[in-house]
Length: 125
Image (tube, rainbow, N blue to C red):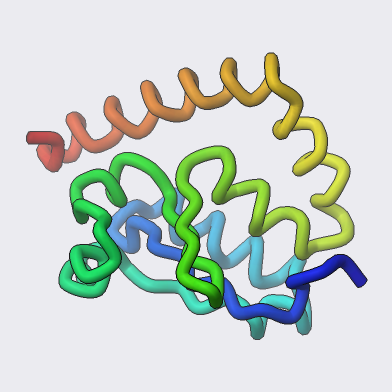
């Protein structure tokens, strides 16, 4: 078992977003027992916790943030990679999206998609 696999991850996600809620449900289904090691925190309900960790809540809406048990925070594609590595069927995809060229391309696409979604919802300042 890879190092850190049993550590709890705290995932700050946009609980208002229907797609984000579907992604969470899919992850929980695929993760099985490993999903018990993931705490899902809606950004809108955990704004102070984010501020206490040095994360602007608006930044957490713009990009998925994952906090490891030791307090390290990853965001965006790196956060997705942390989550995906815990699910055997997603590990190959985690490796693929971690490749330098793929990662930077996905990052740009992901950032643009989130900004469009938030703007459509009137939630982008």
